[in-house]
Length: 54
Image: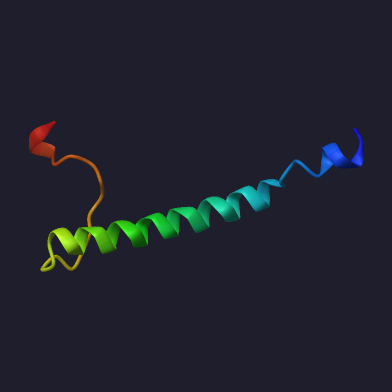
């Protein structure tokens, strides 16, 4: 494998760090949007459906 091809791969640690950062950013964005929909809600739960709708 040549050096140019080797530069196209990220380490597992890099991928994990990127994933954690994106998850945190998505959670923060979701919380902002949820507060716009329901400004009195202080806590944003999971995206799963309520158990009575399953």
